[in-house]
Length: 322
Image (spheres, rainbow, N blue to C red):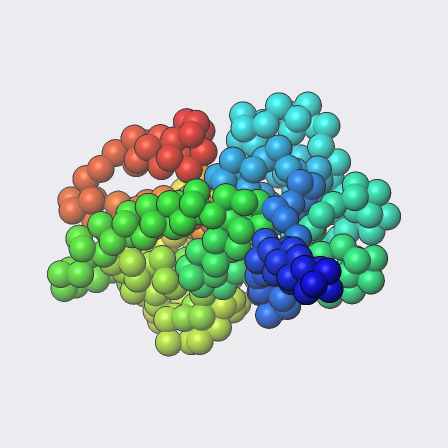
């Protein structure tokens, strides 16, 4: 009888432990098993950090990307977290480099890092530190990341609400663009150079299409390519959207000799995302990046005040106007 009771007790306790486990697969397809929501996280990807703040789990952060302190986003995160403002949270690396000893010293329950940092991941996992590898290519990847983070931090309902809200916002835009017949042709310009762009296999392409535009290189199934002036003139876009660029403004592009004769230049339809934080396409803020493009392309149809829209969305995502 005692043996039977022991067996029953053993099964009940172990089944309960198993039921409480958190199981997720990261962007490598690697399954991660956690016994409980994490208390200490090192996040070396700034866009992923943004999602943690949206979930209200910033108190779990013990390490962040160096880019938060050195980049355009610092002032925004300073408004969200006094520890960042005073630079008290350690920054042991970023998407390009990671200080293994510093990360281990922070005793994280999990490390969030770019999935291509394979050498760093291997070392951390050999030290029995769970790693969540990230690689955002599509809008669905943005949703997956925030849902997974909801599980990691015990914020499932919050994560589901954020995704539901974002999908509803996008549906509003799609309902307004579905009947547009003469869609504007768009060239997206990265900050590296005038000729760096994203084509069919990219989140940029998805956003342009949702906004009611046509990516001029949608038929090239690549995420990132470098073209030349001749090809850009051949595409002849109606509008040029610039990623935030510290060295060039739309006025510089309008004066660029190599681009003269292009419709976007002749009609002065060159627009720049004003900063990295608000327009981050690898987070749920892709909603605002999309709204901005729809407004740029069809101001008569999308008559909303972008600044007011920004306040509304930031208030929802962060419970704060940023």
